[in-house]
Image 1 (cartoon, rainbow, N blue to C red):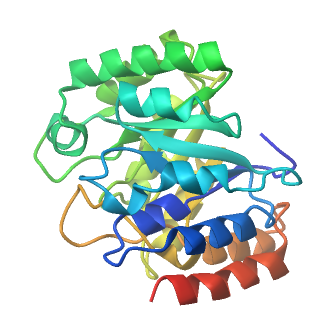
Image 2 (cartoon, rainbow, N blue to C red):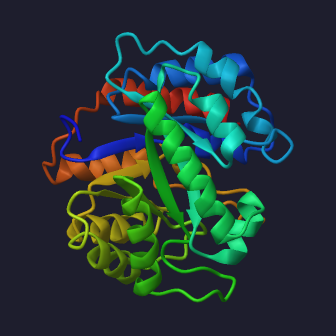
Length: 286
């Protein structure tokens, strides 16, 4: 964790990945470099995945090569979906974290990474070993972490089973992803309360998708349950293009930081620079 009471993860990658118009490489570089000066702990800045599946992320290598992390306290995270992506990501000294979306819904895991849960877990083992060799840290996103729209079995026992499997490999950051935005505050609370006391050595986070009406109850539920890590995106743009046709927005960074200020929860966010990035986002996401 950081100067912040929590680990704050800004997710421009999630905002961009499903955007229909291609955002130029130059715009991505300029936007991410501006975000590096805001004071986030982690910047989820790109993904090494199939360019055919997510065309918007085809230029991730070029973007990362042009990011100026010299004077920034912010660490870089990229998403990978398989061994090949992980092998590409670990070549970059500037990347600190690799994120892997491990869905506890078998239907969504097949849809998202074209693999079964068992195959995906073998990938996790490989990627974790690779991260250890290269001095990186693996972040596991338990996607569909609060249930799923496919009718797959879901319950606290499933969450605990997979958290157990991950921690046994030495993974110490697990984020529950509300992939299609269906989580209720009660589900968020229940999921976190079933995990946090059992694994005190793990930093548990949430990657919540929310809208202007339900972001606050979701955020409050996660805070009250002892969540330590929060993902968000400026303007609340984004969602997983592999999940459904309509993207469900991300937790809006400005709403979240405003809430922390209101509650006197300390963060190391530079509000002026955040506002500058918000103006840039308006231009980029037209």
